[in-house]
Amino acid sequence: MRLSLGPLQYFWPRERTLAFYRDAAGWPVDVVYVGETVCSKRRELRTVDWFDVAARLAEAGKQVVLSSLALIEAESELSVLRRQVELGRYWIEANDLSAVQLCREHGVPFVAGPSLNVYNHRTLATLVDDGLRRWVPGVEQGHALIADIIAGIAGEGRAMPELEVFAWGRPALAWSARCFTARALDLAKDQCGFRCIEHPDGLPLATREGAALLRINGIQVQGDAVIDLAPELPTLHRLDAGLLRIQPQAEGTLAVLERFHAALAGDLPAPAPGAASGYWHGRAGMPATPPMQGSPA
Image (cartoon, rainbow, N blue to C red):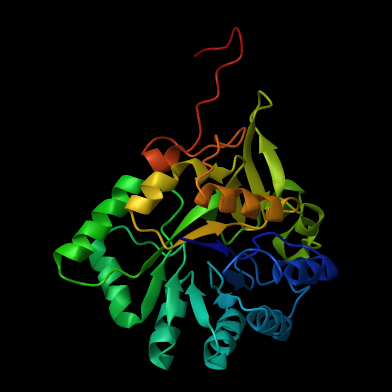
C-alpha cells in the first residue's frame, strides 16, 4: 500500500505553493496530484507553471497526475483541460466527465477523481473501457459500498482498476456556480478580490451555537472535521486498496504522511482528535451537535 498527495484544494500565494511542492519532492509519498481543481479564477500559478511543478516532481521519482477542475463551465476551462491532456506525459485526474471524454479521445490514461460520481460497478466498468486506471471513490462512500462495487466487477470477470481511498483531509461536500467565499464576504463573484487566498485552510463556518461545521473554499464547501482512516488499515487491506490519499493542508502535511507510514509499518494509531470518519462506516459524516441547554431537542 502506497501514499499519494492529493491536489491542493486551497488558494495559496504563488511562492508558498511552489515551496510546498519543492518540499514534497523529498517527502515519503509515491504519487502527487497537481493542478487546480476548484476555481479557474485562481491564477497564482499558470498552466505552464503547473507543468513545471509536475516535471520537477517527476524528476524526483514521483508519479505525477495532472488534476482537472471538478466543475467546468467555460470554454477557457476546457482549453486548459485540453492542454493537460494533449501534453501526453502524465495521467489525468478526471474530476468532470469532460476530462473523461478528452482522455478517451486522446488515449490518455486517467484516474476517476472523487467528484466523478461512481456508485455502481457498471459505471466503473464503462470508465475502465474508456481508459480508467485508478478509482478514487467519493468521500461519502463507505467501505461496504466500495466492497459491493469491487464484488460486482469481479462477478463480471473484469479486472479491478487500482483503488485509491481518501484517507486524510477535509471532505469536499459540494461545488456550485456561485462562490461561497464571495457570498460570505458580501462580494460579487466577478469582483471577489481572490479573498479565499486569505484562508489557507478554508473559511470556517460554525453553527448558531458556535460549533464547527463547514469550511468555505471558493465555490467548494467542505466538512470542517478531517477524515482519518489511519486506524482503518485492516479494512483497507481487505479491500486491496493500493493508495491512500492525503490532502495537503496549510501546516503539518509531512507529519501526517509520517503518521501514515508508521501505521503501514504496523503502528496503528487512535483516530486523530476531532476526526469525523462516519461515512466510512455507513453513518453520518459527523456526529450530531447536541442542542444548547434549554433549546428544543
